[in-house]
Image (cartoon, rainbow, N blue to C red; front, side, top):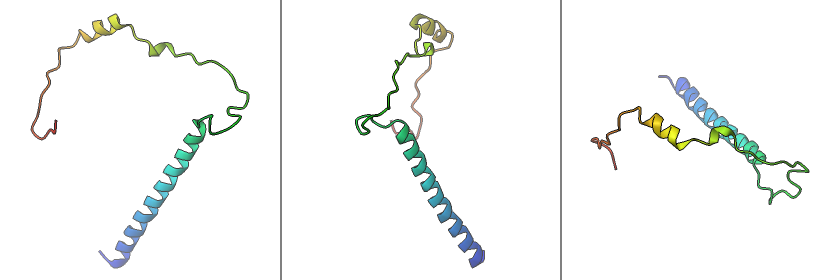
Length: 85
């Protein structure tokens, strides 16, 4: 590999690393502004009101879940070579 190829690969790596870090920072700032704490922003959310209702899919009938789980054979816990715990 010539020096110019090595230089291009190293340059690309640093530019890619810098760009991905910048993108992560921008995304975290954007998401942080969406879910910011009202205590930190006086007047937040600016006159918007409403109530939260959990979606129906959040609630599971335990008997239905047990019936569904009974269709499958019980799992056997194995400890394989190389596992830490």
